[in-house]
Image (tube, rainbow, N blue to C red; front, side, top):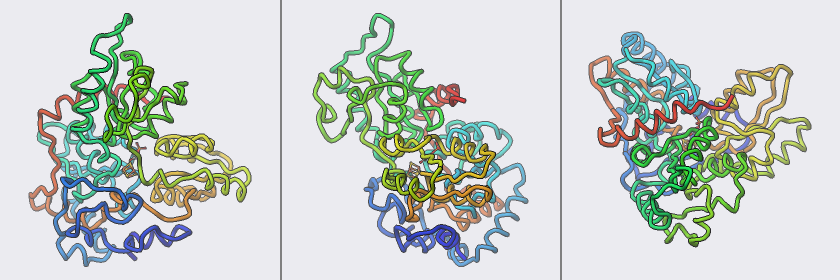
Length: 420
Ligand code: 13P
Ligand code: SF4
């Protein structure tokens, strides 16, 4: 049984694409696309990294053979390699991860393995870039499939953000107010390119993750009159709203329009300017799904990720990062029914791990993150066996001129602890 069969068979409902039953290598040499899954309709930038063809022996190997080969390679490499896995990875990958976590925890983990020569990052491109920035000199960071990007991260590029910044500087000037706060602080979600993290580092800004977004916005409001938040409008809006910022003071910035599609007064009154980006996985969740879950499962506890649209977060009982969701389920002492609004691999794993609870995904259609799906045990075996031979494949390297300011913004983020 392939891993996607496992995913499909363990969850009720239809899949959003029949192509999910195919190995990810089916898409390596085709037209550039994110592949099947939630973001298959999103537009992939022309310059996105491409993955060359996975050698046929890995495509043809059975899942059991791949697991054996991964185990043998890891044993041979010992402490020389560390495998990091995000919660959204398929189970077949998670079982080989030395650390499993959300993006904040994995960024921390990348800093705590100074003896490893290589960090194999089973997640997506922006996470591997972050690991490379935070890793020790001489450590290499490997992304097993270079096509594992993130459609949300791709919705903000450095040129559009620089252009927005120039327009805002013209409108606001650059002088601080009487309390020393500059006109605007840039905040980028972790789900963004290293270039945008570098932009924040160069311009007095900071990175946030979904687990520390509120702490980061507090940090930014201490130093600035307002925030330019990119790329995820939903995380920005949900977090600022919970902090009491009125919706009228959160205009959206559309990079294809002058002044982002706003008038000058709207931007002068703004507290948080939200970039026009979103996650196609979390955009699938709806208030109707929550109402249905409540009607069919009285007493259900609904927890969603803050990348979901605001009406969904408002209708849920709680919202939090992937680690928050995991901890909430783990902490429930009584058998509980949970309806979860996040990626299907993680929801299925929680259901298997906590059989005392009834746990299901709010979305009845099985539609994983297209880019997390691109990491398969075949690619993991391929990069690990290459390391055993002394070859480093698929290394992610952030150039120094980007990495240095990006590190400044990331270190600010790591100091901004998630609220308890
Ligand atoms: P976390 O920060 O919760 O790990 O989420 C990362 C992500 O990509 C969610 O879509
Ligand atoms: Fe990007 Fe959404 Fe996938 Fe997270 S779930 S990696 S934000 S596309």
